[in-house]
Image 1 (tube, helix red, strand yellow):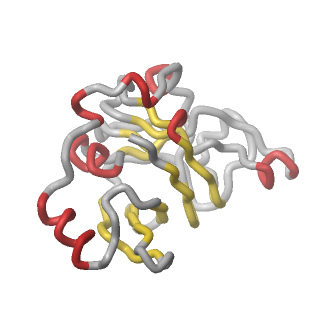
Image 2: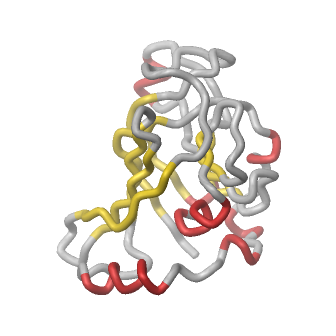
Length: 167
C-alpha cells in the first residue's frame, strides 16, 4: 500500500510517544489494511476518484475536526469525509519548542515510512514536525502524531475505527 499525503492547514498535537515510533508501513497489521466502509468507497467512485489517489488532511484544532480530501482524476482535490478529534491537548497558536505541549500549525508532508501500523495507540501517523519553515524559525519537537485510542497527552487522537479509515 503506497500512500503519499500532504497536509494543508494541519494542527497536530505534541507528545513523545514511544508507541508511535520505530515501525514502517511494511509491518502492516490487519487493523492497518481494513477495507474502507462502502459509503466512503461509493463517495470516491461518485466523485471521479481512484481508491489509491493522493489525499491531504486539514485539521482544525478549535473545531475538533479532521477533513480528508482526495485527488480526483482531473487533478483537483475534493473533501471525502471529516472525522471528529476525540482527544487533544494544547491551545490555539503555533508550536515553538520540544516539551511545550503545543500543537504545531503549518503544512506537513507525510510519506509511507511515517505511518506506524504497530503503534501502542492503535495506529499512528507521524506528521513530520518540524518542517523546513519550523526549523528556520528555531522551532523544535518530535513524534507529533495523529493516532487512535481516543486518548491524548499532546497528540491528536481519533477513535480506533476512524483512524483505521484515515490510515
